[in-house]
Image (cartoon, rainbow, N blue to C red):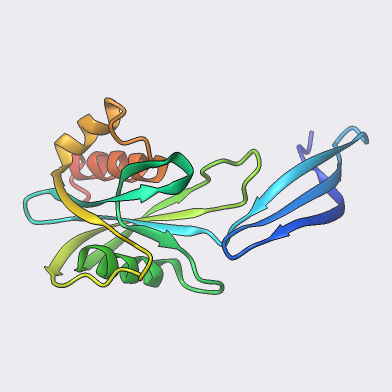
Length: 181
């Protein structure tokens, strides 16, 4: 069993600033045909920045699709052809004014593999210094420092529903507990 689906035809539905939507006709492993709706996305990056007191730096921001303020680790959309780590460093500086050191990859996250091609790159770093923020002109953020133990508790109590933040917090806590960081 190969578990592979062959693309036969792609129909473009929408090409926006952030997403690209297609409907693909595909051939299944057994020879039958079906369709797949795909949201293309350039990908993202998320940074788990930890200070000397084991506090993570978070941002609260209004997320329009949910019509609510969401607590997240610093993150952002990748620019086409860019390096995820360099994008993450830029987002950390822009959103919380921090410069990190000792960056370590926490892997990649597929937020919704049933229909979306987005891949989010996760990183951990220690905070080296904190200065002024410089968010994008359409970005309004509130910075919060939360101890790693409290952040884990918040994830487990569903007080942090954002998937990339959940994964990065839990991986950071586990690796910190094992003495990796």
